[in-house]
Image (cartoon, rainbow, N blue to C red; front, side):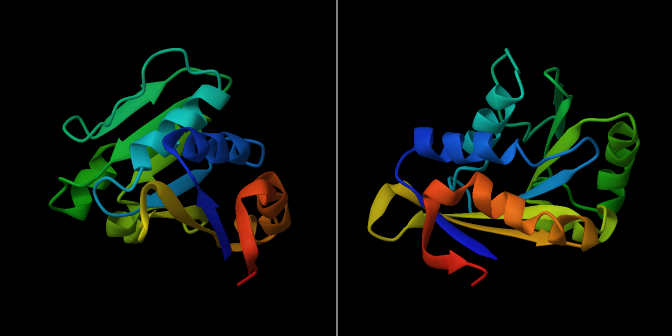
Length: 166
């Protein structure tokens, strides 16, 4: 696990943009954190780095939005999903088969029906500063374990002292 910190929404977006250097088509990035932790803010920075031109907004009520860029970005929010079958019915796995990357807000709630390889990004509000975020990044599964060093290098400027491999 890599521990990082950001100082503002722009900084969180910059960290997200840096992670686009290590994603590949068909990857899943699971975004975890409380309401207001910065999951959509993260996705906005990630999307801009992929060349998304339109405004990225939370798909809380529509569950899935797809944006065009250098590769398709599938932004999923499963906060309101009541049954795992609803996640399956979104057809996310089929969309990933066509290429693109998926960012899944509240992805930990649907972990059993998501691919076994994913990058988990946990966002939390810093206890002493509402604008700062504590970010934990970890690769899950064999595909991400081989990219762990690449992830660490991509976000090195945000890694807190002693935060790599902690």
